[in-house]
Amino acid sequence: MKGIIDSFVPLGRGGAILFVMALLSGCSHSLPGFMNPQGPIAEAQKHHFWFVVIVTLIVVLPVIIQTPIILWRYRYRGNAVDRPHCRGNGSARG
Image: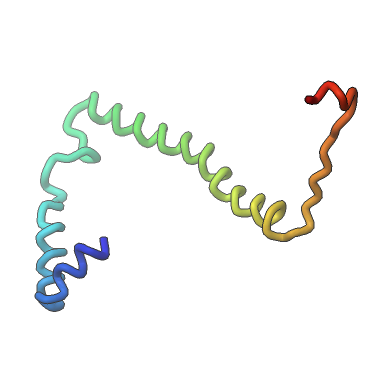
């Protein structure tokens, strides 16, 4: 991304603004698009899409939130205890 922005630096701020305007010129609410269904099946697919997004977020968000907490608790805090639970015949371990 930085390379794209650096390529417009010689054009100045106006060049960067024109670049952004050109990228956004295709965005319009009047055009039929993915989230603007035109029929009953497309409407059902839209509802199914949002249902899948919500169910996925129910699974993914706790993982994303708990990963840094677990890393901080067991890795970065430095007082984690790792005791191996070795029992049985020690000579059979090779």
